[in-house]
Image (tube, rainbow, N blue to C red):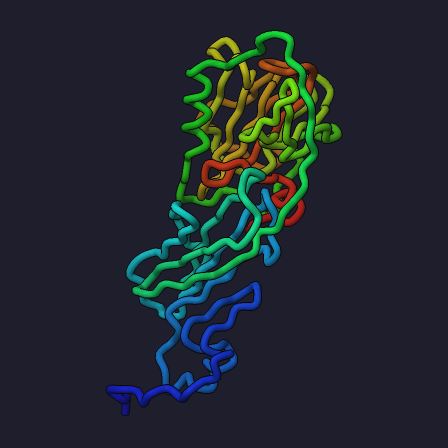
Length: 305
């Protein structure tokens, strides 16, 4: 006989009412208690997992929301600060949002709120500090300011949030040249610290004409050329990897793809050059998550499947 009501739950120690040790947070009861009282209580509404457990400035945060109930009326929402991030289904009853952090953020406690199925969970994550190298640049004249056309095209590209996930596993190196400028470098211009500037990507000092490959699968969503007004970025390719993840490739000497093409990981998309505002042949590779520049290294070394 199926009961029409449940007896009240047993009184639990306060240590079991909410459990979060850098991985999973379960509302109402602890994980170890669920099995013991499964016959007495309905399944937990949602669980939240945030990784990496000890993020630093520039890291991408993965927020995975797991529903125990098979009936889901709407996708959950993830909020950090004043911004709400889309979540995407990655497994049965499991959704994920990717949250960017940058060198311009302040280290400290991040308050991440997850809302779904009438419940709200809050996870506090400590964002660690990170020291970034600095450079001093002395400008004697006016450099390339870029054009409104290229800035508008690039800005629109970075805001793409495509529901499909195109990439699989770790990202590859886009070029085999040595890295000459890392992510997050800060700069002084004529002795004045540029508060809003940081190097938004990795620079590979590949030989002129050496191949540039797609580090992951995706759809070519941006192709810009110097002749079209890309004075600052130079010949440019932008790939949409899906679910708010995009990557951009600057200063190319050659472009092998067109907008709308679908490329696979390792496919040659262009060649290293020195077009646009560039002092010598190199590839600038930038990776963006929900519009903000993140460190590509964790995507290359660890991946976000």
